[in-house]
Image 1 (tube, rainbow, N blue to C red):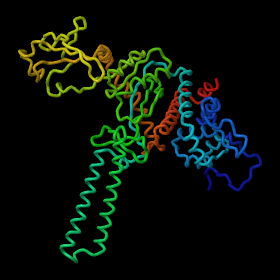
Image 2: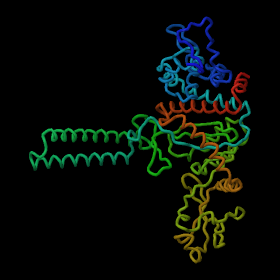
Image 3: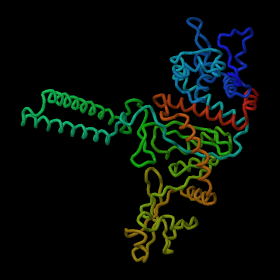
Image 4: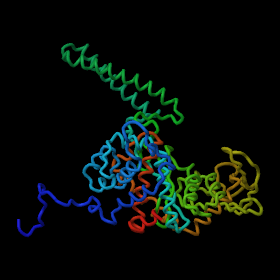
Length: 478
């Protein structure tokens, strides 16, 4: 075995054993976790067990358990059982936990019972990033993405799925009964064992149908007419692929544009983003502590009330308008072909006729003004404009805010490219870390805790990449 690096004899005793600290480099990210958690006041953050009980068996300090979890999510080891094994063989985790090796139940209970405190720790790291002046641009991208829950599609029930399953079972029963009728007409064609087997299958299917009908009654009592049997808070949500979907959660995120750090996030079980722009953008503005903030989002966030709420909160939204016009789809003039004159409070149609305001109505709780020209019946362009007698144009009372936002978007055509580069990469990274099974925990509060650990791990790794390990530790200790 010449000309090879010599290995160490396992049976050789060492007079002066090496220190455990010698195995961890000075710039190892595990030292950041150690310093960060040591600087936290876990009692004020809200962790249980910071003050030990005077009697009973001593427990592990939350400091140690939190370090283990942050290390686990930073290194794609979210499972409490895997973390238990890693504390016994992983030299970095042995160093970080000080040779403590909690069992998986202790780790799992810590994550389950301290969800609110863990979410606050994630916010503490965002505050640290703000103190380090990493939020240099007052620009953030907002987006939502669907993450799978521990609930398969077969264990999620809706009215359409219930009808389809019952029809499938009824066709199976009919097929079995036809086979039994044939056996009655032609005795001896089917063995007795086969006949008994078919009778058992019919009984089993009918029992399953009765069970489905009872689940259907429970499903109809839910607010959104859905029932998830593994994770009760998970919901079936449509994805971009036709006919595809996922049973899980919709995670909202705001990512600042300078260093691509996650400044705000929220886990919801709504399948769309229409009601989330103002709340997510407001949380981002608070986290970044800026007087004014520009927020970029995709068409899924376009809702007039949400955009108005952003403007009133000092937030400048950039959201492209959804293209849902039936007139444009039919090849007729769209509302964009009608020019609004604010001084005269009227529209100018493609035939250069004035359409003054005729009436005001309330639609879905919002005040809407209605305009139409008087020359529509005799207009030569009427066939290209409307199928009705008059072409009516509806205008929301605060539509000037939407018009201003559209002009702003026209002057910044690169905004959507900035949004894609900023936030979609973050979602892709997190889903790659999670693997095929995204969330391990059940119910919305626990899933929110797990998401906070992923966000904390992502931000920590990102800041280490930007400023380095030693600079980050100095900032934490400052």
